[in-house]
Image (tube, rainbow, N blue to C red; front, side, top):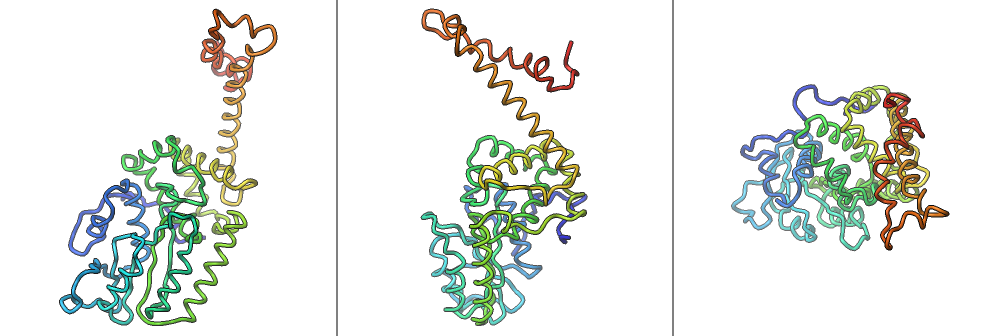
Length: 346
């Protein structure tokens, strides 16, 4: 069972934090202001995990090392940028770090679609005398930017509208954060467009080779199909959290859209290992209702288009049939398809 299984009882996971000296909020203030609030808050979660409680300092690649207090072992220096020239920026920061100090920065997916982040990270670490501690994908549920595991879901307006509620709906925000921790963080970095990398100053080529081999094996799992790249099936603790979250319609809608996108992106994908019996029953009900909606819309749009009706529903070359579709759908759902079990029959 995961150590991250429970949602917070009081403070929302993605609540804004007050800024203070050398705080996480200060670091986020340096991030690209065009990023939507949800994406910035998901970065908070990932950074907190990456730092593991170490004091966080902000990096200035252009600072004079002689005039800058060194970053000691046990401290973490964070570069708030995902620019493509990160290798040069990190090299300029190197003189500021003492042995054992950590270096944290973002690796964004390249625009050319060839994801070489794992190889480039291990290469840079070897060349400059660092050890790769971790590389964690994030923002896999939020913006959907270059998210390989979700396909085109992140670009859909309906998805973006739903995510737009996150900063006003704390429980939806909590649920998104929980999905990030439980599903996105354990995946290979190639699954999402954004990842946080952590390096420790001190050469360890053997450890870097082991890390790269594991990362490449996980990337191969993702290439073979999503289930192999996802974390193991949920246990009862995670099911309890999921069931409580899905009791809210907005959360259930987000999860239903997420699973729909995964089924479209990965043919044959079966979410059963991650669903409790209650969650499976709820989503099966939603799927059945969606199928009824689709059938009603199909009938309402098709019945007048062929045979003897086709000519009757045209007047002076103007099609009249579409004007009947809206009012017909309710009757089809209530009386013909019995979508509501007789509850709406008059």
